[in-house]
Amino acid sequence: MAKAVVLFSGSLASIVAAKLVLQQPEVREIKLLHLRSPFFREYEPVLVANTGMTHRTAKDIAHESLHATFRSQSVKKDLRVLAPSFIPPRNSSSSQRLKHGCMNCRHWLLRKALRYMQRANVSADFIVTGEVVGERGLGVAEIERLTELAGATGLVLRPLSAHLLPETTPEKMGWVERQSLKGFRASDKEKIRALARELGIETADFPAERRCKLTIPYFGPRLERLLREESLTMNALELLEFPLYYKCPPDVTIVLGRDDEEKRRLQSFFLPEDLRLYLPGHRGPMALVRANWKAKAPQEITQIIETAARVAAAHIPKPNETIQAHWRFESAHETSKISVKPFQSPQDLEAHHLKLV
Image 1 (cartoon, rainbow, N blue to C red):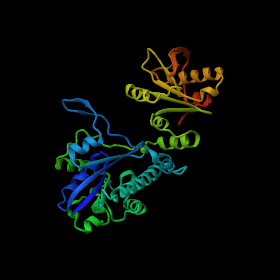
Image 2: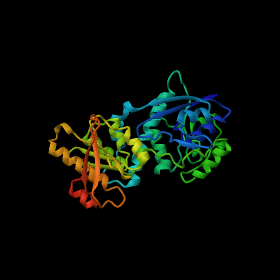
Image 3: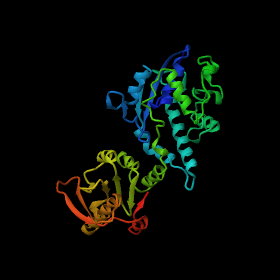
Image 4: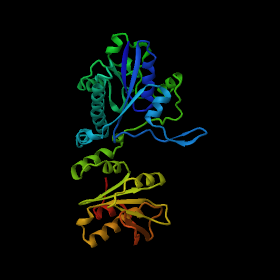
């Protein structure tokens, strides 16, 4: 009888992989290991029939679907060391950037799982993941390579793509029956969903894809710039995900929340020294403006506020008229007003040394 550690993200693929292993008569126990990283999206709120909006975490999903031991670990303390390795080489293509980040991240995840597996109070025999051949451009060769680099050769079972990969130790030992495993590729998402339904897993609440932030095209370059120019904090890292993220040298950052959802998220990241700017009477964006204000002369501060207001006004419908913006520093109670004309084009932004990064 064997015991397995499942790298569990809460995704449909990770649940299906765990279920397949649980069905094996020679597997007596699985332990779910959920690694929380600022680069991973948590399970999004989903609309459950007849109950309205609710939020289900990876732990909720684990208990509902698998009834297995669940362990969650934060990896924030590793962030400063890990982040540079996720940044792709300069001038690489989008597919190369994606593959670079995924290879390094998955290698690191496997190393964490291997260390957890080898703990005396865990003493598991192998690792299970929901990885699928071809996902994020990682083929058989890349998957074998990252397993080898993690020092886990033969110990990582990928039930959804096992028939495409070399036989692993749990298969050779007879703990897992190879014929019960699958040979799915990244293009077989509907087959995975169909298998989930066969296994009694409700698929309606799962999005088609749960993405890592590092797969967002602009996230990697922004991260590189952040590591080069500023101190790395969780707050600064979270802001990189907003689509409208402007930089103005030497140290001004303007982040816009466009719709109600983005505005609610942005609300969480204001620091006491940040400036808040919004456009009353318009369904326009809210702006978080961050700079080294103590080093600025009053005239510079006024210019930064005007620039931020013009950026925000440029993102409302038909931004041709003069727009009034309200602003205040988070540490202050008094709100001030400023009237500006919106920026009219990318060239107009560039002329004011603004860049959407």
